[in-house]
Image (cartoon, rainbow, N blue to C red; front, side, top):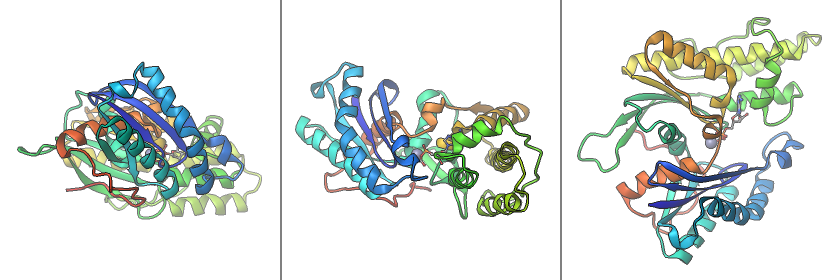
Amino acid sequence: MKILAIETSCDETAAAVVEDGRTIRSSVVSSQVDLHGRFGGVVPEVASRAHLDLIGPVVDEALAQAEVTGAHLDAVAATIGPGLMGALLVGVSAAKGYALGWGVPFIGVNHMEAHLHAALLEEPDLVLPVVVLLVSGGHTMLVSMERAPAPATFPFVYRLLGQTIDDAAGEAFDKVARFLGLGYPGGPAIDREAGAGDPRAIAFPRGLHDGSFDFSFSGLKTSVITYVRKHPEVAVADVAASFQEAVVDVLVAKARHAARAVGAGALCIGGGVAANSVLRQRIAEACAEDGIAAFIPSRAMCTDNAAMIGATAWFRLRADGPTPFDVGAQPNLRLPFV
Ligand code: KG4
Ligand code: ZN
């Protein structure tokens, strides 16, 4: 079964063709970073207009790379939420149009569920339960992904172990980078800058050291701002490295603690911040020490893409059937936790 999948929840216009929820026949991502960079963040209206311009060519490219036409496709999927309303609407409307035109089902996909599935797409034999640290621009959560008890038709259940009580990890990276004048998007900029700095130069606070699986990053962000204002001569690379160290320390400590608590055989990371080089290295080291498997998807699979939407859509279509055409974009859609 071949599914054309579309992702337009934020600032990447993406389309992919995925076969049987496993095999990526094509995955095209067109980033709008250059458009938003001069504003220092994603401008929703600019994103919607860019999606409108890009959606047709990006879908055509995904079909061409997969060497298929509409006649070969069995369904069309799109992210229905969470995300920016105007941005989501472009992908959802396009997907419904293609589905109606080709006479195949439409499947609405939860973007966060797709980030969870990104891991499985590259590691189909992952043993459950697995604890997933989901760290993106809008979310930071620890989720236990477990096998659904029979006779459920959908094979997985998700249990929320903890989440951020204020800023998401990616949001903290973006805000601190902006304050340090490192540009947008902030995560990759801090990752690069930190390479030249000393992670032990400044002892920034580690938020919520309370034994819970919840996170807090807004105090850390304020500490960085206060420190730099008091010490204007400080090297930016040292601030970037010390900030990144504080974020990664907390993420790894809590993820590891969660994996132990759940008895998970593996720890997995997903979402844009999972592209961070230090986080990837530390998770791998922690898992080796704890004797559990580390699953660290490729960077392209961590950041927003449509292949993960196509994989999730396949599972959802088999379990729930097609999504009715009157289901629209849902900017505040949540994960279906047990
Ligand atoms: O998952 P994603 O592509 O989009 C959302 O669904 O939010 O995540 C984007 C976030 C941004 O905040 C970006 O700064 C962050 O991921 N990010 C990184 C890195 N690459 C992207 N954060 C830290 N280090 C990176 N290398
Ligand atoms: Zn995302």
